Image (cartoon, rainbow over all chains, first blue to last red; front, side):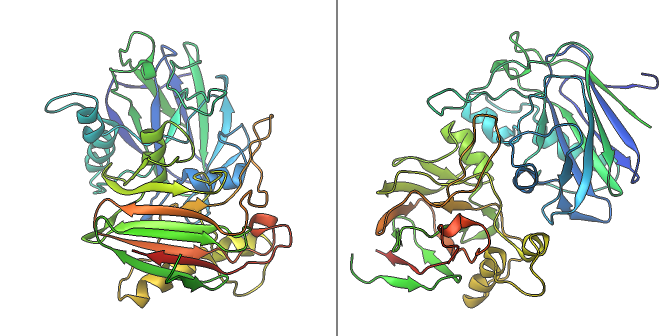
Length: 198
Length: 198
């Protein structure tokens, strides 16, 4: 794939998509979770919503061809292609500073919540509270006793997800900076990913 | 239980709880789903959040003793007691007019989203977009192929859930008016429930 932009480990980006444009997200090293949000470009209060997506899919995760819908039940994205095993998370919120403090971190720690706000500010938009994201490549298995766990991604280097915009929207990506649990690989080390728009 | 207030089938109520007060919700007929929200009384932007609860519980559903937390990860309620089989839903958004139109209804249909707004207005508060609720008694089984379904509640007449306020908050309840799928029982007929505060 040509014209890839590297999204550095632990950072975020906000990407404007016109309806019909496609965004490809590449898991360069195969081990990195990418939190993904989408906001209606004309109304930031309308956003990609995981509960409404689950009601649309009657599954916990999307498959190629599935529409991704907003809190107002309008299509905002469509999953076009997915070369990974299709293990993505729709259950867990993005990491934030409060979560890192709960996990014993003192002071500042980069977070997907901070990346969400910073990325939007980089395109002159202000939105402080990130909606629950689509956590691409995040592996949250359910054990047979019903307990959820966090495991390293099942994807392999170069796995990609392709999304098509169903409305003019802003997609925010965060290469998750979590380095405490093996959410971003067994070595607990966030890695670069990449994306391309066409 | 004394001093119960009946919540008529298909309607909602907003209930102020001071920290430490307890709210009991009774599934009078055993077949009725009750959508449940909680908002910080001092900041309506802080609300009970299912993704943050799942991250707290590492389960899809709460058990007695579990804290229910907000989008800012603060405890807002605690599940004190549950005489039902513990089948509640945290995955599906509340019903709204758009959903009923998708299901073929023409014109108006009562909805949990409308009940949320109307109930808050009854205590002079304005909040238009309901967060994803805790759907008490709602039975969303997962089939072995990963597909979600909507089935009649597993609860029996008189089953109750008791919640304790961990902060001064407003709880909104909606006796779900859904009458198309058997979400509120095999007869697709919404029923009265009841609640009590102490």
